[in-house]
Length: 577
Image: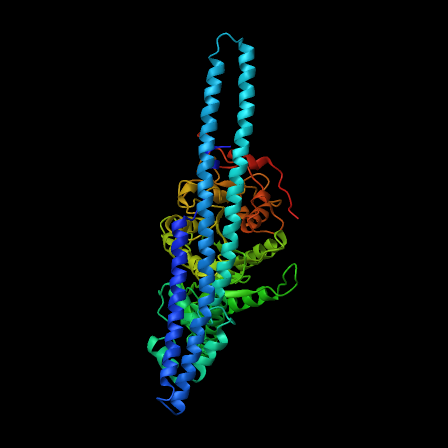
């Protein structure tokens, strides 16, 4: 047992928990006062105003009061749960402090006893050594008892925190703005209010709720709140009327964005085909659209390996004209709104929609289906992210693609999380120059990423794994001994070296070149039944014990970087079932 084992505190302080409870109680009181005020207004109007408009107004006031009352109970329950958890944390902190004192006392007493034995000059040396060993054994037993008590305290707090979290999630589902998550307990009341009551309709228009979508760049949480207050009919009209704007709004559910983007895709195909003679750039746009449509159909034709139901595919990002018609597209294989695990695949050098989207989507499909096999009780969505202007071979050494692409990647990663109530386990996977873009994004932005995977990396934009804003020990590296790109360290340190601080995993392929470096081995990291794909999948589902570790490369001043520096060069590759 170490001092750190004893000195842990639960992460949330009682003051923070009490503050959250106060906010819930205040919100419940506000909702109750609002309901009372609306009912008083309803009573005052009775007999003072007659006619159809008066009847509609009284009905509206009654329904609005019911909405306000509906959130009081969940908010009060959340406040009670938080106060109870705060008391548990206070008690745990007191117990931990007591155990810390007991630990310090035991340590001091042990040192005194050992010093006394060692200082006893009249006792033979062998007897003194035996006495010291006996004291150490007794001390270890005492510390083990303190450690066990400490673990029980923390386990009790964690269990209480989990129970409190479940209560808060249940309360949030009842308090969430009407319609924010599909059919909910408030939807019927909200729909009734919006359907035939002119006062509500007027107030919604004045607040801009029923107007067009907010401008691009609006913070995702504001977009989410705005969407939550729309009725189903208003949402459908917005998707039909403004698909480009809706599809590009960060903060909306991925399923909504996909529906809007696919409508935009159909419109773009119809417009470009109706044009007749098209320019070269317009032809590239049309090619982008037709390819994306085909890839969505192909993904949806594949069955889930366990349920045999069709795989969900979503068009998260769609701009066929971006980057001089090279295109900006992100296709998710799996449901981003519900998946337990979400992974982003970031491609490398020379990637664009026409030249690389098919292979990237195929890799995403493989990661999703293999993740399903590796973790049958969870679900995974993998994003084939062709979302930046990747450099070409003639400008890669001077291009700032990683810097600009990092901002776009971070925004899309954050947007997926902003649209969800429960955050997924998130992995960013960068291949080739895509590892430079991914590393730059994780260096410069707090994205909530749990794991980073770098394969075939010419350098991740940093010198050590500590510079990436992911948890310690959660940067993983795959590099084939035959992949020449993985030796370049052109854009940062070589992540396969031990001093970089990443976990290297096996990535050799049965079809690798037998004798020398071969650029073909740069493109084999996602091939079926390979060591690399197996480890990538286990990182994606959080099964880190199943990741196959590989020894680090060495640096020899008298040898160029290559096979001679890689311990993996002589190991026979294996097939992973």
